[in-house]
Structures are given as C-alpha cells and as structure tokens.
Length: 223
Image 1: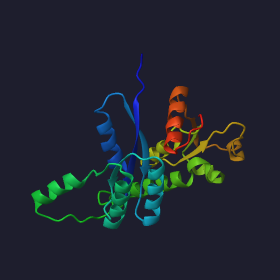
Image 2: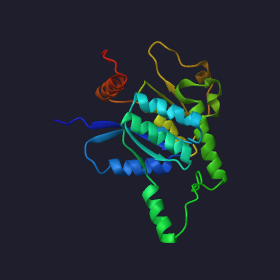
Image 3: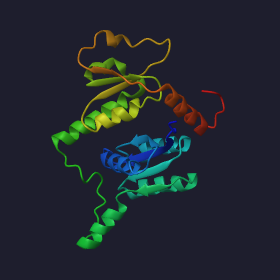
Image 4: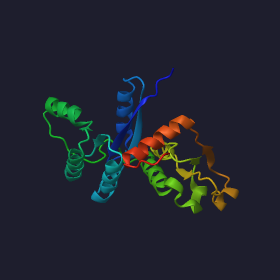
C-alpha cells in the first residue's frame, strides 16, 4: 500500500527571480522521502506593497519561509511577521555570505539582485515574469496572442508555480482556470502562436490539496 506523502507549505520570497531559492529548496526536499512541498513563490519583492501580498498569503497558508532579500527594512518586516505567526524562516544566503566576508575581509554590499547582470537575457526573463504575473488566473485574456504558452487546468493544478518557473527562463506564460459550465474566452478561437497545454492531476491528490487549503482557512465544509 502506497503511503500518502507528507505535504507542507514552503514560501519562497526573493527580491530577484527566485531561481536560487527554488534550486536550494528542491535540493533540500530531495533529501527526505515521501514528502512533497507545496511551493508558494514570490519574486521581485522590492517594496512594502509587494511584501504585504506575501504576508497576506502567509497568514492564510502558513509554512516554512525561505528568502533572499537584501533590503534590511523589508527583511525585518518579513521576519517580524514570521515570528508573530510562529512559522520557521531562513535567509538561505546568510551563512555563505558571512563565510565569504570573513575569508575575504570585506563587507557585503547588500545590493539587490547583485548576481544578475543587466544583460538582454536578464531583461527578457524579467519581462516574462511580469507577463506571468499580469496573466495569472485568467487575467487580461485579450492579449493572450502575445504568450508563448497558455496553461489550462482546474484549481490547484499548479498553474501559477509552473507559469513562474517558465517565466524565470524567459517563457511568456498565461494561465486560465477551467471552471465547470464556463466557456473559454473568445480569443481562443483565433489564437495561432501560443502552445496551449492542459494540466492534469490525480483526483485523490486534488481532493487532498483542496482539503488542506480549506483546513488552513479554518473552514469545515466538505471538499
């Protein structure tokens, strides 16, 4: 009999593209058997307004927080909220940076996104990430013809994390939830460029994810 994996929320908060965080988190999870991380990814967090959206989501779905934020005030706000919620948090680059600083005898610059050179490739990725954010969950369907990929799927099929993952690699992705009884937007009848991909999920797994979501919202109704 197959044992259901232990699922848990992981919030990845970055002031850049989030690739560093994602790679580290997945390497950590790979060291544990029968566990599955539910990723909540937030990128380009460089203002209090954008951080507030992260904190709102964290209150609804608490879990481990991993972050790379250089700006000290934003970092302090995030850490303070984590302590109030009683959730663990870790700045994944703190210890490596301190080791470098001690070895080199130099102070850190605390420069946001310092590992990203302002190349054409960098701006292409940022544009793709902005596109994914603007076209998440069925937003702005009128310009779907500008997308490289359109993801379709019912709620909780990882449309948003997949969009962000591809956006980090320069792929412009829009995603649209499939709702029973609702038709696709008219623009689908004339799309020629984007690759349209349907995301599927095991029914038992979907029920489990939705039940966890309702539980985190302190709701008791059946899925």
